[in-house]
Length: 244
Length: 244
DNA sequence: TCGTAGTTACGTACAGCGTACGTAGTGAGG
DNA sequence: CCTCACTACGTACGCTGTACGTAACTACGA
Image (tube, rainbow over all chains, first blue to last red):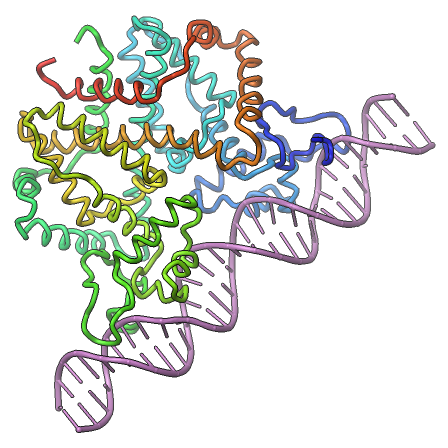
């Protein structure tokens, strides 16, 4: 019933976790690339040209093989994304926790932010990808180790980790979105800001949004995204901290 | 220098906030549709077929006009998305706050969750879209009104609103991702879960992740996503609450 | 009153995408 | 040794966003 197609080849017609499939089965000519080769090529392209540059054709070209050959390694493009996320997840440093879960989780969060700033396409892939890749498991275990000193069930620990990761992804995602948008648009940042600022100012000036108007009066200095990030983290951790 | 092309028509070659452009300028034949018509058509398609169904061709067909006619109203597809987000943002009820910012923000969050469950494509559009559409401004002003009883600067209020919205988007996004993924995949949910569970169980059984293994031992009941959402919100608000 | 300029409408076309399918060649297992 | 699972990859299909050109329409300035 399921044997009508080639049994092992990764054609997309049966559920599959890519990590459960062995890289090499023995039969046939030996594959020209490893999964790591493919992931690295895709990451290289995404780092240089953004996520839009990651097409099956481009990755294949980067590897120097035919487009369709990629499908021998990766049944669907979604799996290529999973490979990419796993590859950069391997960059997480897995240090020995200091024993203070609050400080340790803060450190994890800041390192994750740095990772995402290094690979700006990562936040966009964090939500859709949910497979537990090898490096994701290692990262999760590391977070749990940081929480050894946290008094609570594993359920609560998972909720803490999910919350911190969610906040990091959201904040860095926003941080990057503004930067990337500016870089992608065919006109200058000044033009963009001028047009949007003029529109927003005009709207607020109508008097329909009195509190927004008051907020504009109050705000003076430019916002420090790093400080905003730090405050957000502190508050989230406060929400889990029974001692405060 | 910028007058080489048609001055007013929304061809994408100069920065522009779609909301600043008047729907009708006077000259030429009167437009066959309003922006609301277009937004509604797109929302209808997205609700029925998901965000992938929203292509310029499909929306045009739903409206009963040629594909390229859409570009008279919407210079780029991104603007169509902005129209969609604004349209459903109009569904936010703007009630009179009770005066307890914590309770009021909780209510806002739950209503936003309901809105997103009604329009499952919304979380996916929340991050990329950052324009201050009319209904987004109304929503923001409403949140600020809820925070009248909150002691803090407008800067802090904005951070609170951003945090709550971020948490809602993230959580509902995850909630929906699992549901949508199951619906989109060509095999059954049981098959999917069996395959992924077997893989995950195998990994944990290797002993490489002792805390993950312990967590699996502990967990018993199925997780109630609504309760997880509620707890996350409470904790986030705790982080902003000086009285706790 | 009449041109004309600024619009609307839309067909055609292009480059790019993911990927189904078919075929040819390779090499280990029964 | 034969067979069969695998690798490799060219071709092709249906889909996408959208640049461009043309024709019809209408409000405004002269």
